[in-house]
Length: 503
Ligand code: AHR
Image 1 (tube, rainbow, N blue to C red):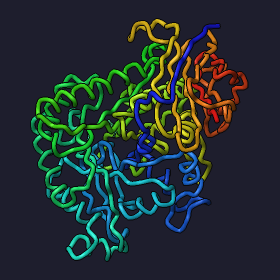
Image 2 (cartoon, rainbow, N blue to C red):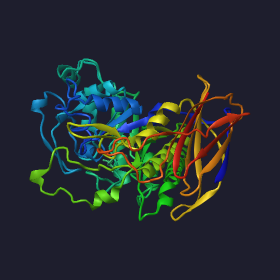
Image 3 (cartoon, rainbow, N blue to C red):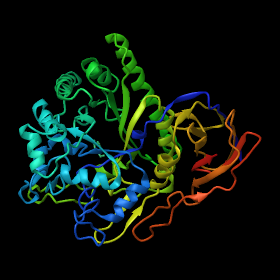
Image 4 (cartoon, helix red, strand yellow):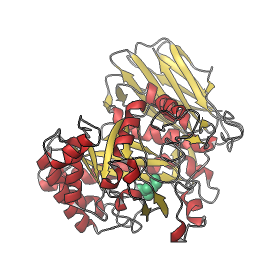
């Protein structure tokens, strides 16, 4: 049994949590939209064809903003295809995922679904195969009240009120050679700057996200951020980060330490953005939109047979349907800890994705919807992490990893809500063999009661929830938690994620 000590003080804060950090991502990819959120023939489908069982799970997950409609998909997307009478919408080849897009669900339908789940729309524009004009047209269609051709077209299509979309992504992963319309940092910086200026000429209150790197391991990482921000600094509010983690070659220790990479990624982008701020002589601060993050077994996806016969590109094929284990969920929980630890600069984040595609929620056509292991850390963190993130001092033993060297066994983040007086601590134990007893000195926190204490762990690290066994994995009550004399004590099982809420 190991031990660790954490000290906090509610007067020392990192920053206030922006609820947009609990966002997600819905792409027209695989069965995320069709046969996922939308399945008209399903027994729970509502009058618009949306599955009520999925709506309930998304609400339970606690998702703030949802990025849409891609992802790689957006770089070949013509937004006009997705509005107007459904029967007249074109069927298009989706070059990103070798699928057929029916456009049965488009902007109006998706927005209506967002109202049902209680989330806000974050729209991505196509800067791969399209440009400034099409982005402006989309903004006119979505946000102008009336009196122009495109706003009146929206009204004619059944939506009187503007959609009022505040956050806009200027393309997707434009640094990636796989992206339709992939560009150099200089070329992308130029079109992103022109698009941003044009969009703000129509509505200066928009919040714009310029594409950062699609991973901290891209050969252009760092230079890409600097070049793109030099071109767009005055015109954007956010730069994006994307990161996916998987266990490689059976190296579990390094996989469990994936959040070290996320910490480094965030801190490097913040440093680069602040360097550009000095260089361009600005007082404005650029924040991070971590708008794709998750565990994703991308190597398995690349090893799969690809759909090649263009005459037969399917509608909503089963793609990227990773089944998440307990181990994956512990890493996932630690990634949420990393995002929260940087709450001063990470003001928006999107779990990629939401349903069926590398998702916390799975569905079977005509059948059930269920929670993957990763559902639990997200839902609990979104519900309990309220108010400010506190600055912690963490003293922990270390574990050795091949990729990251010596890494603290325990990582944690704590939050305090000044309005309710409630606080929460989120912890991960990366040791594969040892339980760790953690003592948390609560400083001036007036907390004497444990309101909730849960852990995610299992003797079988590969345990998962599947169609056949949908509730194999869930949260376990952690009864080791106690508070006395201003100290919280809790024991963390090996390879576990935990949350303790105090009042
Ligand atoms: O989320 C799956 C894909 O990952 C997205 O379409 C793309 O942006 C990223 O490479």
